[in-house]
Length: 422
Image (tube, rainbow, N blue to C red):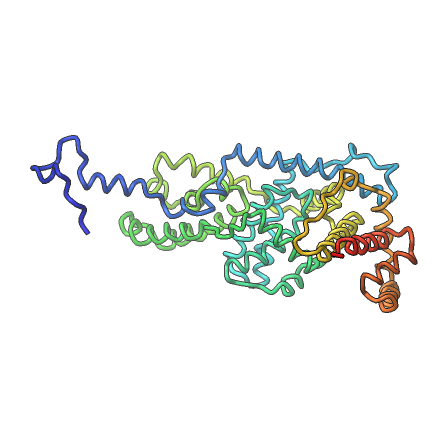
C-alpha cells in the first residue's frame, strides 16, 4: 500500500526543505527499537556498575541489621543471651557476598550435567541466582537452597523439566516443602520475569557469519575457526557467572568472548569485526572474564563457615526461631480460616507486635517436646480423646492452663463464638 501523495508533490514536486519519502521511511526505521530492547531483560535487568554497587551495599546493610536482631532472639531462645554479643559477630561484607555467590555459581553446571539438563537450564539457573542475590542477601538465604530452587525453576522455564524428587536425590538435606515455598519467594524477587536471552545465539551467529563470509575472503583455515569457536563457548559459559549479563547486552558479551578467544588462538577477528566505538565495551567484558572467580575448595570452605556463624536464624530451618516463626504462621492461617467471610482481621496492637521472648521460648520448648520420640503417639491419642475440633481445643486449654499453644487455641475459639450472629 502506497502512501498518499502530498499537495506539494501534486503541484510539481517536493519543496527543497521537505524530507523525501525515502528519508522519512529511514527515520521511522531508525526510531523502531530492536526486539531485545522491548524485553524485560533490557528494561529491568540491565544496570551500570555504580547501580550494582549501590544495590548490593543496601542489601548487605539491611541484612546485617536484621540478622543482629534475630541472632539476639535466637540466643535468648537457646538460653545464651548472657554470653551473646552482637558486635562480636563477623558478618559478610559486600565483596565477600559477591565472591561467595560467584564461587557457588560453578555448582549448577556440574549438577545439571549429572541430571542431563541442557546448557540453557544451567545458564538460566545461574542468571536467576545472580538476579536474586542482587536484592536478597546470602546472610538470609542459604545458597544451596537457592541454587536447588533456581535449577528446578529454570528447568520448567526452558521446557526441560526435572522432577523435584530426582533433583533432591542429588542434593542431600533439602526439604521439598521448603524448596516449593522458596520457589515463590524467588519468583517474586524476579518479578515473575523468567525469559532470559543468553549470549549463545549471538555467538553462534558470529561463527556462521565468519564461516560463510569472511573465511573465504581472508583465507583462514577451518581448524583455526573451529578452535576459536570452541574457546569462545568456554568464555561464554564463564561469563554467565559474572556481572557481564547484568551490565551488557547478550550480543556484546558474545563479541567480547569471541575477541578474547581470537586473541588466544590468533584468529584475525579484531581487525575484521570490531569497530572503535565497541572496543571499550568488549575490553570491559574481557576484564570481567579475567576476574571470574575460580572454585577454590579452601576459600569456599572458609566462606561457608563464616556464613554459618552470621546467618539469619529466622530463615534457617535448623534453628529454634525458624520453628517458632513457622508455628506462628500455621496458627495465623488457622485463625484466618476460622474468620467469618468478609470480616477484616483486627490490626495488631503495638504491644502485640513486641517480641515476647518468654512466650517464644515456651513455644520452642513445646515444639521440641512434640518432636521428641514417642510424642507423636501421645499427641494422636490426645486428639482422639478430645476430637480435632474447637471444643477439643477449649477442653485442652482448660486442662492445660499456662501453655502457650492452649491459650492461643482457646482465645481463637472464644473469639469466633463472639463473632457469630445472635
